[in-house]
Image (tube, rainbow, N blue to C red; front, side, top):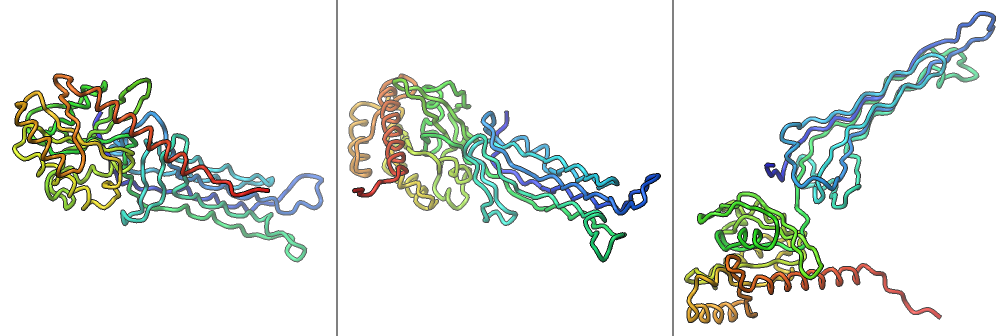
Length: 345
């Protein structure tokens, strides 16, 4: 399945049905009078969050969504049927923006959430509605109102508990493949990862979702490379695992480059809990590894964990640290959401 995290769609709600002009005419009924019914209401265009989707690929093949028109009213005071709704099924984490791509209309994060994006038009009144003591035989009816029409942008921000960040070829995809059942493409050239990948990791009975995004390079926040487009996928993560390639000559520069891009992105990414790990340690001599660990500890203010996704060294320790950090963040969020009771007599 191809990954698509942004789509532009056109929405058109259903028009309302027209009211009816009709008079009751029956044998042996002396006073008939008007009996034209109202038109039915047009259908709405609704966005619904569903659990079994993780991409917007469906909207590459269908960009127009139109709800059904309401049925016209009829004689014998019969109201027209309402038009059927048109439902857009989107994955959790989908944000819906207006055509200007800045005005947020909805943010759907939980399966089952629904939001009406375009309202259907009301049905027109039939001539029975206009009957009064001074106008007992009205011969007019209203046309149905037009349904709303708009263009929106769908933007997906994957919902994951932890996210992997780092320069290209830092070993992020290899780590994801080693700790989960995900099978991302892995190769020895930059930007092998062209789209985010998700994997479910289990640590001591605790399952969490780990997201891998394409590598960041200097200037990513301004559009350099492809990582800037996908930084939004880690905005919802509680914890970031920053992988630094241990085979690089200057791991401190690599660390500071990625941290600088996260700061320039300005979405609170630098305020998230960050775990630092030096990867590919199986390919680094012991003396050189000690020097790089000391330099990275001095630059980051914390000692990096050591991991090799290929040999498995340090892998369990990193997964365990991720699980503990995620649990701590979840507990803190739960405590913050719990209303504090004041003093009571």
